[in-house]
Image 1 (tube, helix red, strand yellow):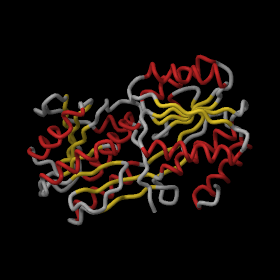
Image 2 (tube, helix red, strand yellow):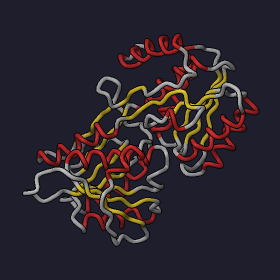
Image 3 (tube, rainbow, N blue to C red):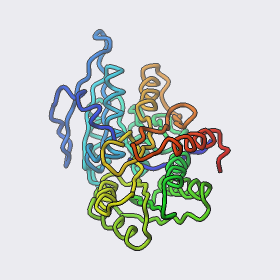
Length: 337
């Protein structure tokens, strides 16, 4: 099972209430906050987990989902949390090292773009523990990874797009050309064409995960030149701009959300493909508490609930739901494409 080619990127709002206590952390070049969660055995030293991100924790996409998963998992385990957001690439190593120096039990990097730097800091600090979301490393003693099946994520979105499009023209916007995003494009394209081989798929990269204006520009261009009426994105804040373009264009134009169940976030979102980062993060924290951390990747897919279909909007008819749910079963067992 190789889910290595997986991407980065909400349901932060679901977990905002978990942030109880704020404390300043002196990490160079970062704005850091620490939150404390209740529970756990007071007779034991409270464990601490920290995350650093290259964007904001409230990006409405992958960053928000990952941060929310860390907070919720820590709450369930009685751990304290901290984060550093919008960290420049030049500061990734020093930010991780600062958390190591402050005695954090786990440092989380929410994407495979951080892998090289995490491996460097992990090598320099063999007693520290690190988790990378969306990568697959099983040979480093102090690193664990979590990976949702991005081929399935792409197929779930593509099949629904194929069922919903009236113009037979659908789109995809990625942030940057990560292998993980390419996997989603592959799944999206093959599933849509399995539904209807005449469907055309237009793809683009924004070169960013934070430029909403670029997302709106790209989507507007796809609408005006290709008459795209369904879109799927893998670019966090960029995706919000694409949704603005879909709404502004009017008519029956739709978006499929991810990685949280964000169907209610925009009138154009018809459903979400959900990645359960909490489920996978829980397994990592369980491993630390059990004293068996390292040399492991935690996989998530349709079979174990790591990947799932979210809430439908009213735009999805009962007939389309029925057809789609039969396809979902086939995607799960690998027989659809």
